[in-house]
Image 1 (cartoon, rainbow, N blue to C red):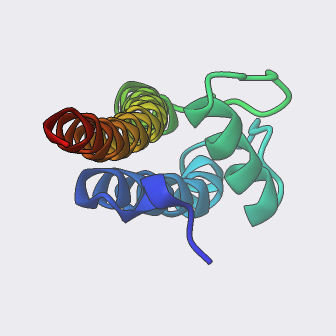
Image 2: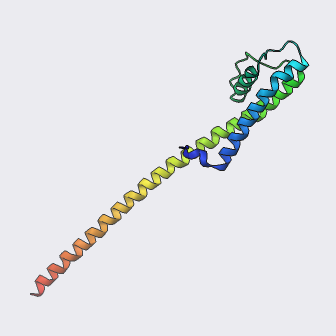
Image 3: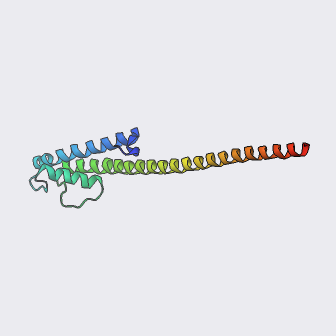
Length: 140
């Protein structure tokens, strides 16, 4: 079962791009930091993935951070694109939730109008029948 708002192509594309960006940079950062510097905070690949996720979500705990020039450049790229894409994902989810809520209320309103229309038709038929009976009684 998929959530209805995940069916939109824009959201799917943005979400997949965000995950790919986060995972790729998270996998690259640790070897990059080890290659260009000795005093790195990244010891394992999972450290790099953790840093990438916290950077993209703009939490940024500060337990892991790049210290080399290439690492900081990569971190800047992740910060700019990742946070922007994460914001777009949040915005698209919000729009889709709002649309589904509005659709729900419109459907409910249309159903109510349909019921009112049915009741009016029944009243018209009933009243038309009663008028014919009264009219027929007067003729007799």
